Image 1 (cartoon, rainbow, N blue to C red):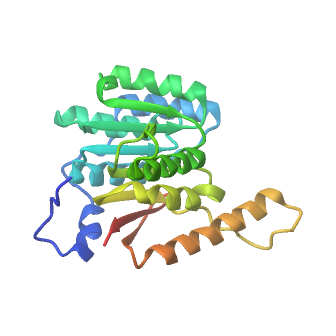
Image 2: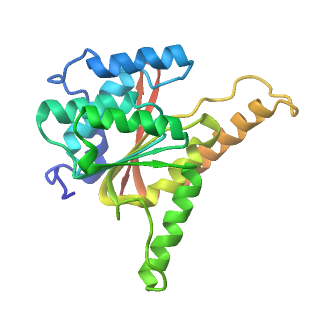
Amino acid sequence: MADPFGEIERSDLLGFILAKDSEQPQSEPVIAANIHEQLQHMGLSTWSLSILRRLRDAVGRLQPASLLEVGASIGHRTAWLLDDFDRKGRAPGALTLVEPGGKFGVILKRLLQRYEALAWSNVVVGDPVQLAAEHQAWSLASATGSELSQTPFEPGYDVIIVDGPSPVRAELVSRYLPQLTSNGVLFTVEPDMPTGDVAEDDEAGMALVSGFNRWIEVVGETQTTHHLAFMPLFGGTLVAWLPV
């Protein structure tokens, strides 16, 4: 993806990208709304409508040639993006969806078929952390010519969206940031913050504490290599990274 905002200072880009697009519809797309109902019946969580609208606005501005969504679940967030591509008649050349659950992978393929997006999309089922590690190893081997790359990913992505449980979200961000193109943007939502005292025998609570500590580390580690932006919205904070 070429730099589409050449007249804007690079340090100011994320503020522009994350701004609200008043020309976009406010209502939830019909297919996304149906998936939202399914999520509620299944007891699964999703990002708030405010965050999804702003993410849709940002991706619409970027017009990515390649997009990676990590933690696609049953496609609620994906449906928002596919609806935007469909309305504008402008789809990316490659869309990769990563989802740990095989059953969810089948659901995602049905969603892609509904939007006639199978030709330029790929559903990768597996552990996101392991997949990222394998991709890095394959990329290094391919670069040295010692091994034929077998990675299911594109060489790089103009947009990466990362979701996952709060305890592992920071690690996922750290693992997938290297897959950004030079003008690419990675989006995620700030993980849940631990509240109150957590007992040492509270495994879930301690995992949340460790995950948030890792989040603080990742934010600190990437401030010299990336521009960061935090957009507080109803239901959470949308966070974005852009290489310097």
